[in-house]
Length: 145
Length: 109
Image (cartoon, rainbow over all chains, first blue to last red):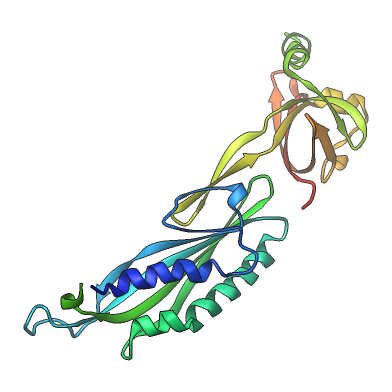
């Protein structure tokens, strides 16, 4: 059994966990306390088939798909803007250049950085969160699932 | 007209107020540190929003003016904070006889 989607998501958690300065990393954890900050959370992404896959038989033929997981980095400090900028830089670099992630996407796949958004607010200190989206394109082989 | 300072605020502060210092001057505050949750994408981050109520007449009696409020060091209940903003809470006797709720931040910021 080979599930490329799960392999990529599991690897993503490992990759974001190597970002310097993080106190914790999670997958799909929606309940974060300030003691865990700075934290990175990988959220499982939507998956869609790439146009051009439709129509032909058999139904178990390989399909090109795109998955768009979201990675949230949350921090609380007086310099939260600069901190998030640094963490974003490390995140993008590590995801796009990771050898294992690139190997999982295969010869006709790819990894792309899509976008990021930020939120700020006051708590004990200034709180900031950065949400980054990546696109992973890979071949889904029903026979391997 | 009812004197709200004498009949309402003073007894309340006498009961639940705690000793504090604002830039070294002794005052009385009501600790209003509250739980706070902010969104981080699909996640929620839980912390506290530190705050404190103070009577405007007490500040004026101690010659602490509004110009002194920004970044003032407010110490109470074993912790020290900096004033980052505030909300005025007027009273039926007027704004100058009401309270201010100081919105605080950690000193190490």
